[in-house]
Image: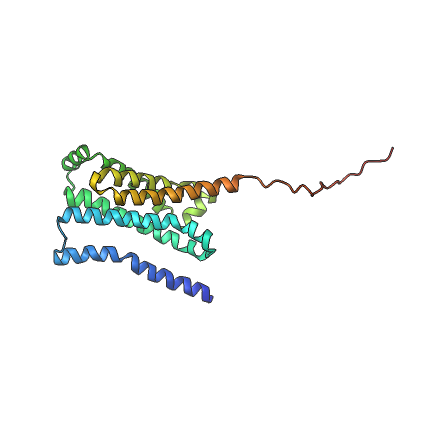
Length: 221
């Protein structure tokens, strides 16, 4: 199989991006091996995995606007990989809560949820990510069909909203700058998406100079 120069460049970019996406988890591995937690280990792991889940979520949702603005259509080939990294770090975030923080104890998890209701919002976002990750392949696209597949994957915007609520709710009043910044970014991306859908839904009016074609001429009296 031969590859065009553009395909080789995209493959190289994907390989570099894949390596870069693994850097946050290498920080966790470094912390485990050196006991360098920069404070409380449980809080560090939960916040680290949570913030990087949100970072990759924003990157994933940003792909379509970036492709539109730059006309770099090859960017769409990066979206699936970024979306899977969203699920990967979300899974680490979930495991950090149920395992690292609560030792997989149902009673401990229930007490934590009752004490911190924002956990429910985060869990709802995680549940929505599962079908998105499971259908991020060509087989699922063929089985579902393009329209149903797109409708399903639009749930990524709902996940983004839930992530904003989760981030705001868990943050203290004195530390609202970052939740506000992430929320503004999500609002901008959602606003662009809504505007684009409305623009595409507006029918193109016929030209005033165009004359309708007449297939049958009127017979003279």
